[in-house]
Amino acid sequence: MHGVNGVYSKVYRTATWDYLQAFIDEGHKLGLKVHAGFNTMAGGNGSGLGNQGILYRDNTKKSWATYENLSTGITNTMDNGSGTKFFNPANDAVQEYICGLLKDLAKYDLDGIFLDRGRFDGIQSDFSDVTRQKFQTYLGGVTIANFPGDIMPAGATMSTISAMSSYPTYFTKWLEFRAKVMYDFMSKAKDAVKSVNSKIKFGVYVGGWYSSYYEVGVNWASPNYNTSSYYKWATLSYKKYGYAALMDQMLIGAYASPLRVYGTTEWTMQGFCKLAKDKTKGDCPMVAGGPDVGNWDSSNSATQEEENQAIVNSVAACMGECDGYFLFDMIHLKMANQWEYAKQGIDLAIK
Image (cartoon, rainbow, N blue to C red; front, side):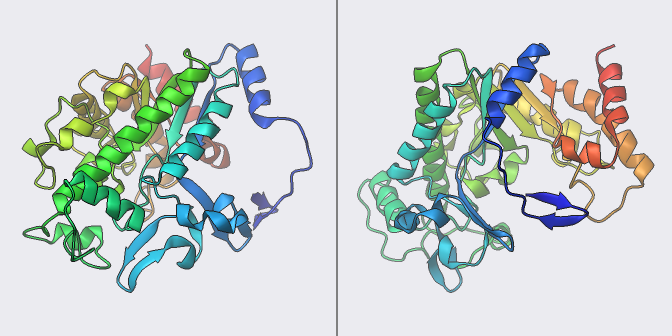
């Protein structure tokens, strides 16, 4: 799908050639390394242009979809409007299915694979019976009589949780459990890829906002980073499920405003990258960060000149703190004719 004459439209592909193989062939001819991005836990998408994905194609897979903790009750995401539809990452069948897809992908002559959306959908995900039973087993066989209330209130959002002076009985243990689910999945996914081609680099894309990334059930830090020393939502055992050491490479979304390139804190590009290196503790050999130039100024606070300069400055600001730079995403550079600013930034950064 893309714009046709300025209109968001569906365009049917009639070509039979392999898009990925074409990228690999042309990239390798140019001496480039080619890594494939993989949309991990997204099982479908519904929009005005139609529905895509296995969760829409195959009604028998509805139980694979995440169940959300809404104010109206626990609801299968397929019964909750359109948009991106996530799987339940704690579902064994989902994990097996995704690992099978990754094995197929690893048959290509790729240099690496990056798992994007390797996470839960959000703080309201997942409250299915499958996940409930697994959590109760994780607790040592406890039966949670008040479910989900003893974890979080019905319909709770990140704003709800941020306002809490104390948490429900099992909330922090729940965050620990979710991090373990994703740690265990990433370990399986890595084994699946390496079983086909041990030379392919395995990695993830994650958001740099670690302080709130528990929202999606992911601890991307090193297990040597003691999360509980810094954040009240983390248990002592939360750090055990930091998965940085599983990764050959990581992309960190340093998605700050174009007016906040430099700094030492989250929500500055430089700060996101600096903090990511500190939290990963050298466990992952390649940690690269960069901005989201397409969506970084939703309030239109920066002038075009300031945005252009932010692209230039972001390269050195990020590369100076971590092992590389990535930019999300290049179509925005093309649309706004900003390639020259990325080139300026690279030239300055590698002098």
